[in-house]
Image (cartoon, rainbow over all chains, first blue to last red; front, side, top):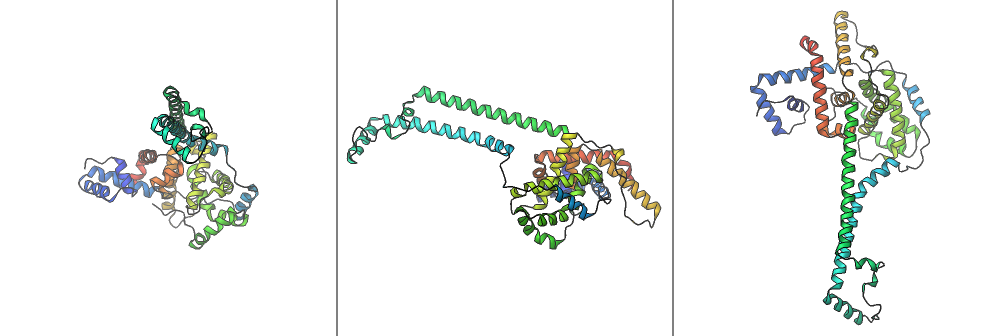
Length: 189
Length: 193
């Protein structure tokens, strides 16, 4: 293994490495005095950090508990917070787009299938066997929105393009949100 | 590394019941949980703020927030991690809102409980721990939080990432930054050890 950077040694001391990685670090440490020094420094630092005392000049426990008790408000049924609702909406948006895309594809395939002469003939035959009047039949009118099946290639393509634009918008929004989050975390660092 | 703040085993045994009762609105059960977690929460925040009064006040705010959010606590999850996570988020909110960067000169004089059998040695230890505390408080807040969770609470990188809601890579980089800064600042103290 090459020379160990400090974070490998820190991860080793923190017990964050796999057994294989830990063995690699150990074998490297055995032959690298510089890394042994880093290891010793980090161990000493860890020991030194434990010398900071804990809080001792605190108010009595009962007083603390009573003060917390005074600040408690009656709790109603848990309500959905606006932020939580926004989060759900944010996650549901791509799923809704996906469902929309699947719906459009299904409609296009159905309209294509029902236009096939063989399928049309089979549907008519079935309606005849089931004794359904030809005017009602198993024609396209079983759908609540028959107009949907009149989609042609261009209208379905347009719908897919619109979904694509919405999806790209969502991706851009997500990237901006992540950027703002990282920037905020960096500011408090 | 020290063990995480100790809580009596008998109390932990009943903790699930206390949480359940508190979720159903039992304030007495919640008071028991407050008694149980008062010191772990205060000590965690004391490491962040370096000020006992601020730590106590923030701990009360965190516990009130825990009461409000208790119905959303999932059974089977670690209550300790949950409540300490709320305390950390309270600290983050305070730092965001007020940009608290506590002056290292304004740190409370630490009250040392050690016996002064050897006054000279005791004074030396006190001075050393003051220097260490000042070095920790001089760290940027985000790095300090990660360091406190790792060194004093013994959390794994993944647990810290979950508590602070940051990627595990960020945990590692902040922790390395904090340790490097401390090593630089405490070099004279480390050489004397």
